[in-house]
Length: 119
Length: 409
Image (cartoon, each protein chain N blue to C red):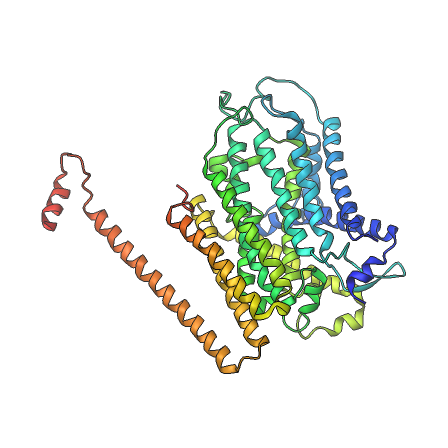
């Protein structure tokens, strides 16, 4: 049998539980409308720049996401090499040292330019 | 017969029953671990903790769940209603899915059927767990984004930045395991640890994984996303009723999941402790579940212990630690492991291997002493600056400061 079917089974259990809880909560809980309750968690004032309406947040988070992509791709290249390490031998090692070295230059550059600093 | 072939023979009803068991155990374990955490932390803080609901307060978490279900399900006016509802479902679904490849026992007799207590055995098992963990981030970031409020937005951004940063360190720490096991399938990795656990052989990898799994699950001392003093509850500030409970459930199931993965990759999975291997042949395959549970609960205890012991880090310290310490150290460790492995595979003489190891030790010592000297220098400079605190603009000097300035001049 396809080895991915059990994943769907456990995923369906989790999904079903989530949907069930949300439907159940809507049925069991009370419903008493109150304008203050529907407001955002603030001191009575609605926060003016909304996240969905093009509100802004620090660009550092975007930079972190970009750096994450670089290193995640490095990991994706490292995994197949690690799995077939014994067959690749010395050749694979030299290739990988060159690759890690190249990425490390970029890493050192980002570090020096302050890309890893949080203030 | 390999585990993959063994599990591949499972008929449909066994897969369904196994899925149900894993799901039910996760829910039960969450209820028990919420109670356990509160009790253990209360003992560490010299108070009593929940002891009223049921024997020893065992039903406390269940009572909390029922109470949450009877609360009003609020959706803030400014929220994006659809995404607001979808986000907790994403969190709840993905947290269970990472259990699909964890091997809980060795070969067992399952209602007269020979199988192993593992849902499926993918050749890319560990990669699958990492990818599911990445999908789980969507639950957090969408919850923060859709709430239409400042605190959840900041909390959601913080946790997602935190999770992805520590995911890099986590992913890098596993490379050494794959080099030694020659496979990414969880059952193969467990089988490869027959003689030596990888927590012994690859100790630095184990340490990096253990640190990054705490960062990955947003737990103390890395629980910056829900720093109560600054962000209220983090990304789930606006959530109430069972939607909040789903995020809570996802957090605890994720803790168990990373602990189970750590057990599988570094502590020999379901194998017995060294010297106790005879228990499996005496008591049958199901007894391996006991060893697995002991190891996972040990990790869970460490999670609680950390929460009871360490204060929360500052966000910049936390990110600095992840990007500037864990990532370069794990990259260097990968290169060291790979070189050592290649040397022994190519049949290099013992002297070369010993010489290489000594060289690495010397380099580590040299670098660390350089860092120490730099730090001392910084401290001295900081002290000097602290003594003469005269700003660059004219100010009326205080009598004491003036006297001290004159001393220096």
